[in-house]
Every structure is written in structure tokens, then in C-alpha cells.
Amino acid sequence: MRIGLILYGSLDTLSGGYLYDRMLVQALEEAGHRVTLFSLPWRGYPRHLIDNWRPGWRARLLAAPVDLWLQDELNHPSLFWFNRILRTRHPAPVVSIVHHLRSSEAHPRPLPVLYRWIERMYLTSVDAFLVNSHTTLTTVRGLFAATQSLEPTRWPAHVAYPAADHLPAQPEIDAEAIAARALLTDRLRVLFVGNLIPRKGVHLLLDALARVGEGIELTIVGNLDPYNDYANFLQRKIHTLRLHSQVRFTGRVNEAALVSLYRSHHVFAAPSYEGFGIAYLEAQRFGLPVIALTTGAASEVVIDGRTGVLVKPGDSAAIAAALQRFSSDRNLLLAMGLAARLRYTLHPTWEESMGAAVRWLESTATRTGRAGEPSPGSRG
Image (tube, rainbow, N blue to C red; front, side, top):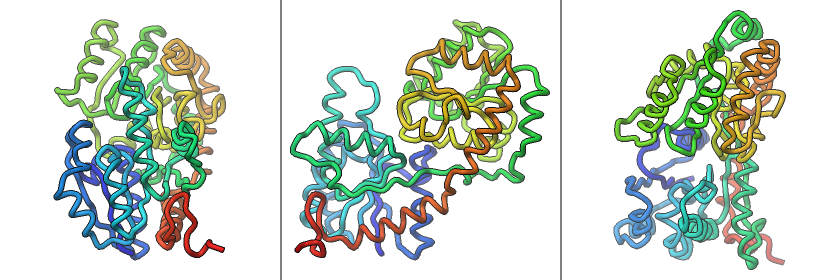
């Protein structure tokens, strides 16, 4: 099967969503399918909208010899209008890979209304969805529900969870090592891994750290681009709160260094809205309890009170209370660390999850009907 994958930039971009796309492409190619990348440069949302009317881009897609289109939903502004032409004039079905909806994020008015409209236009222009969590699927169908004429269940969908066995962690951490880390060290070491953008909530971790005082330290792993306004804001905040002795930035690190950081820390904290949150699962692989949000898909990965703590958005006081409790009650830290590790072992591997996704895509490619319409084989 010939598959066309549409996304922005390079498939090697460092993010959870691009990791998911890479693992899917790998599984497709291992199954004997040929994947061709159709890439658009990063431009900014308004300029991406213009892509819908760029003659060269439109002609390239319409002439592409593919049997199935895969579109990363991140590309929705470049496709929300043109997809209707693509689906009319190209025989291949269109499947959207949905990691996280832009309209789920906080934006200043009136942008949320605009984003919801454009994203709904895009989502209704495809034939099926491959999503990373049940939360993401519910969010997509909730966006449809705003339009009474749409029945969201008419769009076939498949949930394929991300995994965390991509990291080179041999030997795997064991109960003895988790116990030694929890019980035989003094300062509680907290880890954050992710893009340094406001949505990730690192500023809330700094506020929490200021509440609990000394005795807890935070390591922040993420790209320290000097032009990153949020990263610069965080550094100013550290100065204002006098947290220099408790916070360190590593910048971007390779996989071996990341594994070392997971092994040496006690708790993982990322109070952000996530469509899944691969880093939550990575952390649990190394026996780290997770502090995450009650919103988003964190509850599909983290068991509140068992493998971590879920807090309400913006609640730095709750984050501080959780950190203080982990710091003072090392038996709790150990118990949650062991439960976190067990939770990871029960999660599907990339091979299992992407293998099921490939089989679903193969069956989707055989359907000639469009969303909301019966395929020829189902007509009475």
C-alpha cells in the first residue's frame, strides 16, 4: 500500500506527537507499506491557512500516487478547506492522526472561537481518525456535537496508545533500585521533561517550589532557545523567587542522558493539558510517581493516589502539597514508585500498539465510502 503522510517540518522533530508519527511510519514500513512524506514548512497559523489555496501544493497532492492519506492533525490549518477538494478528486481515503486539539488550549479571545471553527471544518473533512487516547477521541467528538447536523460516531476511529519502550533502558530498573532511591537519599528530586511553552505549566512548578522551601530540587529538561520568551520568563521567575539553589536547566538532552535523569529522580511533574503525555509513561517506567492534571488524558496514564497525584489546572498549592508529602513520607514515595513501575509494565508496547494501528489502517484503506456514507459493500 502506498501511503502519503502530511506534516509540518521534519519527521525527526523532537516532540511526543512526532515520536508517535515516527513509530507509526516504522510499523507501516515493517509491514511492507511504502510511506511518502509530504512536508510543509513551519510558517505560523495565518500563513498556514493560505496553504489551502497554494496552486503548487494543491497540484502536488491531487497528482500523488497514494492509496491512503495520513494527515497529522497539527496540519489542520493548511488542509481544513482543501481537504474537501482532495476527497472529491483523489480516490484515497483520508485518515487524521489526532494527538491534541489546538482548540483545547487556552487562548485570548476571540481566538478560541476561530480555532474551534477551523478545527471542526478540518475534522469533518476527513474519513477516519487515529487517536492517541480515549480522551482525545471524546474531545474530537465533542467538537462535532456543537453542530447538531453531525453524528460524530459516523467517523470510524481507532485508539492507539503511545508507548515508552523506545528509550534505551537496559537493564530495566528493579524494585530494589526504586527502594534505594526513595529511602536512602535526602533531597527530593523532581523532574520535568517537555517543550518550554506556557501550556506545560513549568511556572506552576516554580510557584510550588517557592511554597515548600528548601529540601526539594527541580530539574527542567527542555530546549533553552535564547529566543524562547517563556524560557526567559522562567529564568527571571527563578531569580525573583530566589530558587537558584533548587532549580537547574539541562537544555535538550539525548536519550541516554534522559534515561540517567529518570533513574536519578524521585518524582515527575508536568501540570499541563495533554492528549496523552508520553513523558508520564516514560517516568513510570523508571518508578517515578507523576504529578499531572485532572484534565486531559493524564487519568488514562496516571492512577490518582496510586501511581501519582492529579491536581486541578493552575493549582500550585496542590502541587506544593504533593511535593511536600512525597518529601516527608518516603514510604509513600516508595509505594507509589513501585505501583508506577507496575502500571508501565501493563501498558502496551510500541510494537503492540502500532501493530494494531497498522491493521486498522489496512482495513480503512479498503473502504470506498466516505464518513457518514455507507461503503458499497454495506449497501442493501
